[in-house]
Image 1 (cartoon, helix red, strand yellow):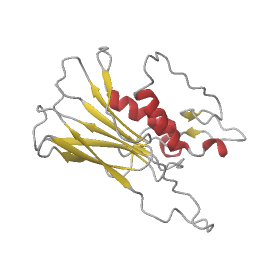
Image 2 (spheres, one colour; image 1 turned 90 degrees about the vertical axis):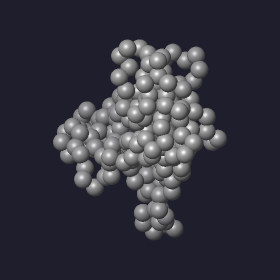
Image 3 (cartoon, helix red, strand yellow; image 1 turned 135 degrees about the horizontal axis):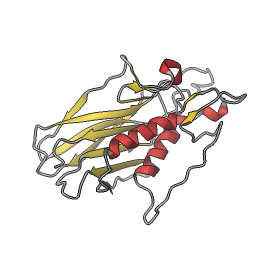
Image 4 (cartoon, helix red, strand yellow; image 1 turned 45 degrees about the vertical axis):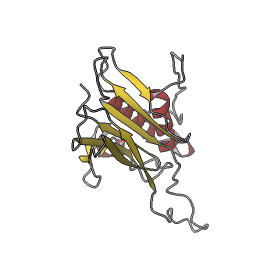
Length: 218
């Protein structure tokens, strides 16, 4: 089962690569294949890996949600500089006429291994999952008091291969053959409020992604 291990971390890293590739790079290629760690799903069962949805699929869903409808060809992504290499944030604009981003994607890549051994006992990771608050100043079009919807890519930890959700939905093969299933034990419909000075604060757990859906982008 090694080919299915440490998967959510790969999903998050793929999200970052797709959202904001290196400058002047016009093509990204990821090698995939049966039993391969980076593939989005395993189409057939083999001696090494069972058929099923893999964690990178959730990263693909998160990226698609963050980019939105870009069929007009006017979608643009701007890097929002953060101080550390294990975190990234991007502003997504739906058109050249946008006065504020349509969405902000925040990727917290600080590793949190949920199944790490606790003093050799084999117990689950003994400490609560930490998080970090990210603050962004929005344009004046985003009024103080405005409600910002938050959607999240979540799992117990960066080494999770099950229990992964995007905005409360699971695409686990075992639930409904990979079709989206809304889970009742995952928080969704979360909002944050624009506060004084046009600041929005988002609490993002380690090894997770948050997408803020702004209502003031046009």
